[in-house]
Image (tube, rainbow, N blue to C red; front, side):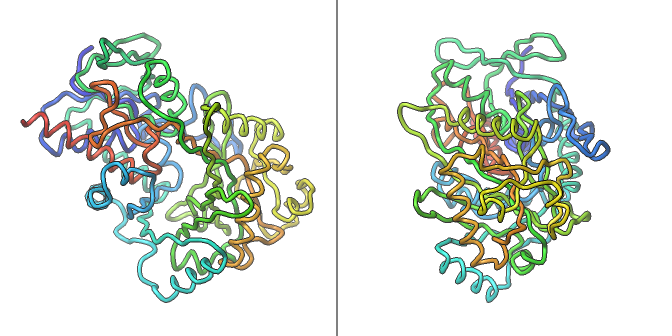
Length: 467
C-alpha cells in the first residue's frame, strides 16, 4: 500500500497534522493508522458495570480517535508556559502564536468560547501571595475547558471533516515497526484487522501519545534513532470536597502550582485539576491500571480532584525510566488486587492503612467506586512519597484544608513522557523521512501543545510541497 504521508496515531498531534495539510491546500494522500476505534464507537462499559472490566484488546479510554486526552477532562492550556518543553525547541513566540491558532480551530469545531482563569486579578494576587509564602510558584494559565462529553462531539466533527476531505483513517490498525533503508524511513509495518501490511510513504509521522511512549522507546532503541531518557512523573490523584477548593476553582479553575520540597528538592507539581469532577481509571498494556480524572461540562460531583506529580530524572547507568514507573504501578496494582488504591492523607501520616468502613464514614466520598482502600505507601518509593507529603502540606497554606485527615490519595498516577527524541525545529529525527510528535516524542504534555506540534508539522510538509 502506498501513500504520501502516513501518520501513526489519531491523537491531537496526528489529527492536527492532517488538518493543517488540508487547510494549506495540500494534494498529498494522507493515511492515519489508529490502533483503536472511531470516536463514535469508543465506549467505556464502566458507566454500566460500575467497575473496570479491563477491555481487550485495548482500553477505550486511552485508545482511539482523539487519543486519551478527550476522554479525560478535555482542557486546553492557552499559555506556552504549560505543556512541556516544545518552546525550547521552536521558541516561545512561535509556540504562543500557534497555540492561539490551534485554539481558533477548536472554536471553529464547537469549543466553548468561555475561558477559565482570566480576570479576578486581586484574588489571583492573594493566592499567589500564599503560594510564595509556602515556597510554591503559581503559574498563570488561561484554560479552555472542553468538558469530557463535549470534547467527544468536537473531535467527532474533526474526524468527519478529515474523512470528508479525503484523509484515509485505518481503525484497528496497529503499527508494528518502521521500514528503514539506508538511514531513510520508507514507511511502516502494520497489522490491520489481523493481516500484516506494509504502508510505504514519503513521510512517516509518529504521534502515538502517552499510550505509545513505551512502544516508541523500543523502536528508537532498535533502530538507533537518536533519543535520550527524560523525565518520568510518578504521583497520586488527590480528591477533596469542593468546599475546600471553592475559591481556587472560582478564581483559577485550575491551580497550576510548582514546588521543590525538601529534603530532595525534586520538582513536584499539580496537574489536571477537575472541579466537581470524577476520578477515573485507565488501563495500559500488561493490565496496568492507572488513575486519572474527568471533568464534565454538565455532570458534577461534590469533589474536586487533581494530580500531584513528582518528576524523576535518571542518569547512567540506568536508562529505562518508563519501565521504572511501570514497576511502581504494577506493585501498587498488586496491593489493590488489580484495582486503584485509595488512602486517606491522615492515615498516611499516622502510618496506617485505610479501611473501607473508614471511607464510608468520611466527608469525602470517593468518586471512583471500585477503588480499593489500602496503603499506597507500601508501593510508592520513599523519595516520591516524601515529596508528595511535603508538597500537600505546603498546598495547605495556599488552600486551607487541603491537607485534612480525610483528603483522599489515589495511586498510581503515572505519566509516561520519558523518551525524548532528538529533533531539529522542523521535527526531523536522525532518520530522514521520520518525524515524532506529541507526548510520545517527549516534547509535549497535554492536548494543546500536541495540537501545536501537529499544526507546525502540517505546515512544514505543505511548504515543501509548494516549493
